[in-house]
Image (cartoon, rainbow, N blue to C red):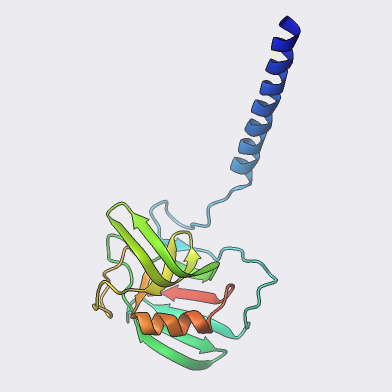
Length: 172
């Protein structure tokens, strides 16, 4: 009986130490992409799979001072849309990013919101995305929780034009 208890304890402790080692490695390998002060919303580009099928000339400019998104192919303007960026209390992060995932529809949840079926969602930094907004028509005014809101039709067009890996430049 004691042999069985000891061998079970060894197996359990082996699992425990393996899990602990994975946690330690994860903590030491992670580095925050934020730059500046801890409350800063400026960030640097996140890494994206280099095997992306993205057309390297496609890129998106988001001008928060104008509340405008521009889609570029090289130096040729393809589209320009009015947006709703983040409110002062929940700003849109500034920096250079890449679209890291795309969803035809996606549920978005936060501290004070829970929106089902958000159309044409393209995440570019942590929980921040460019997406369609069917719940308001205040484009040109900062009203979001940090995401970049577009009218649904324009979000659809941008979603079809952009691909994972597309550069997103956000500035004031």
